[in-house]
Length: 395
Image (tube, rainbow, N blue to C red; front, side, top):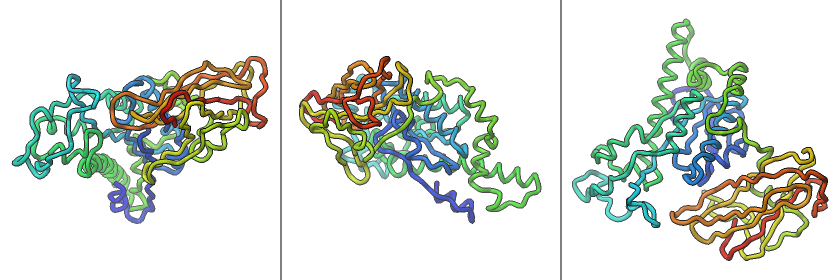
């Protein structure tokens, strides 16, 4: 897409930024958007169709909606394009603790056709329903945001084993498109942008304007994709538009702390025990965080509640990894000038073979009567104390 934009709008200066975060969903991105999408963006592609947590459908779609509203309210009001990839869903009766029985290992000779090693009919018994994409598409229609869909484009061809689209050439595995699958998505997106650019050029010609890079820019296409150049009036309309999945119009969060900044939140008292800031994973998928490995390990996180009124409620989203092995649970409680219900955050999940990010919402309020904090730090009136419970690793 980036190559096409540069070739199509010659002379204009374009930059490409990738704000994607591996193994994460909108429950993370809605709070940390400013870390990943630059204010100068003219066009933002959003792809989460296979990254929403099926165990929290309502919460995930609500997070996606709040994230989408935040994108639409950015300073330059960029054009948004929803890019929905596709997950191959096995029939319910074929789902086991080992996950899908659709294998992408072994003989792949039919990548070049179906003359050798053609997949059996059982391999193609995947299903159409995809609640995440259905919800995302509904939001796109509600907010007037266009979308492209690999599922809508190819489901029936893949299901019918159309030799033009061998499923294991389109897909790398059940969850991820292969190189050609990504190319097909890009072609759909380019087709949409090309149609918008053509319309921009036609309007300019009708007005007698000289066409060229000075007119047919990415920004002009952005305005065409948006339906019109967004204005303060349109932003006011967005603010008046009630959300359909979320109970609130914006995320109930004041700041997003990640990476090395997390270590700066650790309270001086009670002193941390066992938990330490580390960066695991590869360069492509780094996993920074506070890590404890033994029962009894604990750490307190500082929260500044000085700007809140007594008994005023607020929300904390505690980000952590979940995984199918080597993960444990922590008990969480509030100390100092804040109150919350003691909770357990369990990072272990049954089944599957994946480790992804999860945001746990904690409902907190400033104490009704002032309480002294165990910490001596001025910005640490409230301490969120996490203590490891089980033998496996919690992050």
